Length: 192
Image 1 (cartoon, rainbow, N blue to C red):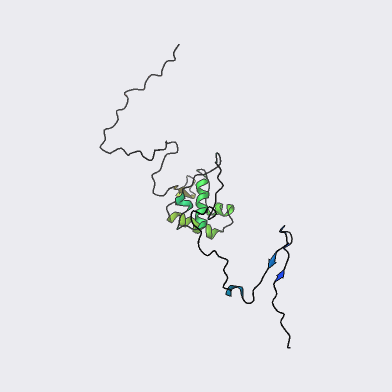
Image 2 (tube, rainbow, N blue to C red):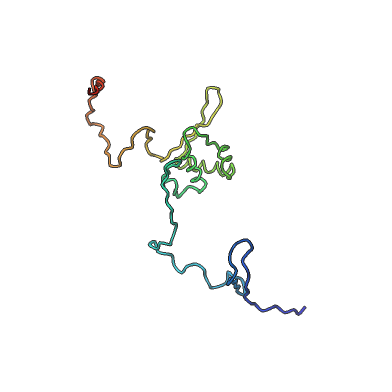
């Protein structure tokens, strides 16, 4: 067969159709041999400094004043939960009390399948965020009662309770009790 192989030559090409990339000056240069065997690296020679303003994510902030949920970094940045479990957890935390969070309802909402969602819920249970218990309702039907803990291990706070300042000290058990008023005070009379 005695055919000859054409010598390697870099070539000029145009940008893919529909990309809107101007094609003037666009060159694709190929190296002889397998590209992974090249000693050239496209990676930076060293990691960027933490003080470099162009390194890492840059946030564009927006002050939310409606339709938002507060999520602690202990969930959002949990090192042992999968991305699916964190996402499902954030979704559940954003829902109002009484919302249905069965595997079936979550499969309707998310593209992940039943197996991945069930696995994510088990991860959230193991981490203490989620508790599922079977219970029987008046009709005799068995239902799953789900409890979501925004902060596993933290004491529950009533929904209408005022927030306690971080520097507030607990009252010692042996502290004297505050006296209760003897009777309901009379309503104040408007000044005439």
